[in-house]
Image: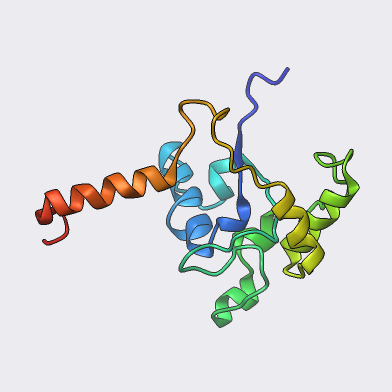
Length: 161
């Protein structure tokens, strides 16, 4: 029944900028891959499921695709791929932290930028500085930094062009 279903899942949509959705990446790439230059079918006729927390990180060097912004008269008049072809469905139930309402509230305040001193205390209580039980392949950023600094002193050419 779903043998011909074509869906692209775009995760972390908050990091998608206007250019990555419309001009540079997804839209034009799909048209090229599926040889659909007609411009009739957005994204070459393939369904795009965009997921993510819109309160998280904005795209670097670009405007967030999901925010209302009209950089030019054409966009204000014609809309964008996002406004014309996506429907926003907001999930309101927190499932991951369902068993810990205090932590869920802390995370909700962090994502909106309104942390309290109590939130910081809750997060500090979660800090684990005992690394003896960490898996061997856990990333140790301090160790990595010390190795990098040592390499830069041994091989000064790495820091200059």
